[in-house]
Image (tube, rainbow, N blue to C red; front, side, top):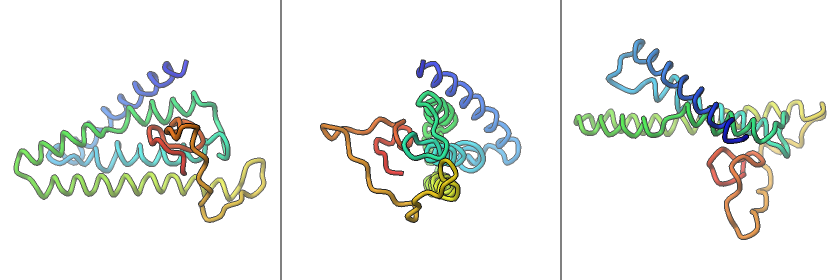
Length: 174
């Protein structure tokens, strides 16, 4: 059933990306990939995955949800909505057109803004969690730092949907 939720989320995320990309292109033109960078895709998806992943972690999130719901949002919606492949192609096109400065700006802005967005989502959800705690009590809240969880036997990567790990991140620190 999880695969069905991922498929539905991916379809909805892809449709949202297509629609918002068209809106951004109409608003600012298609010469520079502003829609991919700022408005709709990578930053928004980075914020959502950071916020939702932290807030819904099964072990200590304020609103724990079943793994299928996390898969729907984090792997499906965010995976269908965010577009590293589009970013890569747009950067290559800028390079091939000799627009080195714009290509460098695309890379720098995308990486810095997406990292900022995922951090804002994560810390925003963490602050919300610490402020109210589960069941109305205040969380421990040691400035957002928690001990790193033990790795599974054999040292393998954690499953991406368990305890606060961002989808596909391979580790559970959050």
